[in-house]
Image (cartoon, rainbow, N blue to C red; front, side, top):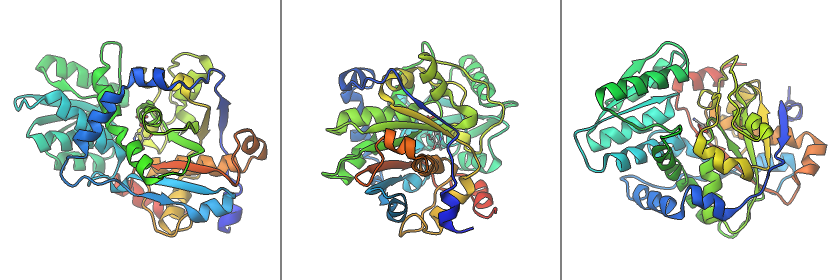
Length: 376
Ligand SMILES: Cc1ncc(COP(=O)(O)O)c(C=O)c1O
């Protein structure tokens, strides 16, 4: 099957318009403040080997979809950690530890957040305990160990690993650096989001005077998506249409937007997009997302390996790009939305559109990446 006839058949699973949409810059910046955002940029841009990740142009795909531009923020180049998560966990470790060398940091993770926390702890000479579920690959565990962390495997899913992390941390007086908020735990997740917002600062410099018309944001618990919304409020002088994409099996943001309140969902089948396979939107992101997201869309796992291959074989851009599983849903949803004329008209996707996508991770899980790249 040719590339054209292949992608022209791609379909999204679900689409939902947010009836409570009411983007308000000031309200957003009350939740993640300008000072929090600016402080994160000042600290992170001072780290050794910091440089902005490239903003690629998916020029071949934009011609195919008849859009003006498709920008792709390539986080495979983020430090040596190969995902945007490098910006969040490590920054929170630095802020939480406040120069204290005698503390132990702990976290639960699907992989990339833990890698960032382990890296940040190692940079500061701190001990680090990482809790992972049975679904996190050994190849991801190995990388965290290479940053000096103690990796503890817990039976069950991500929630089980988080419960165990909280239990052991309370018992041993470890400092939890989690990217998910709960009722009396909001400061650290806010710090991780402030770290992520560095991406939008870089993008605002990289697009110069161009206007982004649409942005598609991947969501797990919503931290990254909400941080980008806050970055839009802080750095852009216009408001693009904001679309959140999730795995069809873990649409916790879509279901919450539909219900007008946080809805916990049951994940029947874990998505290959492991970092996005989350059953409940986090509290702080929810406060930002509930009125700022225009549309939610979900995608199946069916097109992930093809998208990884098309990125790697320069079918979307002039360059060969390394995008891992969580880098694909932005592209998949954009193609599928473009294949539906009614939706395309509704959301004003046309030849004047400049769409921003996030290539959230590279081959962060090298084994899975190779498997997906080499599958049919
Ligand atoms: C690798 C990875 N992990 C996790 C996430 C989800 O981030 P969050 O849980 O902050 O929504 C993403 C993207 O959305 C991702 O690409």
